[in-house]
Image 1 (cartoon, helix red, strand yellow):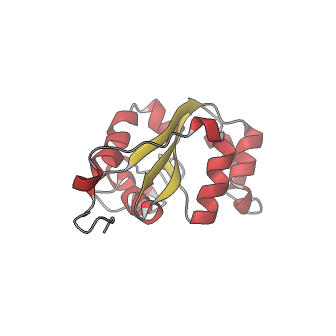
Image 2 (cartoon, rainbow, N blue to C red; image 1 turned 120 degrees about the vertical axis):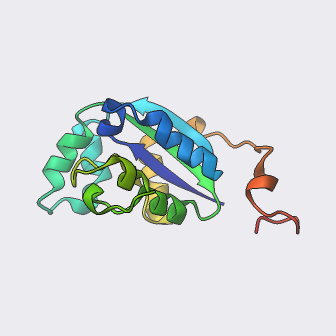
Amino acid sequence: MEKTLVILKPDTIQRRLIGKIISRFEEKGFQIVGLKMTQISEDMAKKHYAVHENKDFFEPLVRYTSSAPVIVMVLKGKNAIEIVRKMMGATFGSKAEPGTIRGDYAVSNRFNLIHGSDSPASAEKEIGIFFDKKELFEYNPTDLKWVYDMSTGDII
């Protein structure tokens, strides 16, 4: 089981797509272990997107991310990072496949609705930027045996 950070960006909130997007992750079987609405400052956005600092899209990305409230959440599940990124779809909404979040709701190449961690190291770092340990909750959902094949006692 791994954790990943997901950010529902300003366009998700402005377009009232929060519930539709969160429900996709819940329906897939992911456990929400952290969730909050916040306003990302420009400094925090720069820290979060530091890997893109010298790219031409960095400043517009920082302005966009800090322009309005966002939802940040931590999802937990088997292969969470890989599966969440597949569910998100290609970075550019205009290139994302139908059936993905961006494919169904995004057209813009800049306003792409959602961010998800791209690796375990990124997830750990990003979760630490947005959440204190006391804001993350460990609990045992009763439906895990129905989400995962646990016939051998382990998650398969």
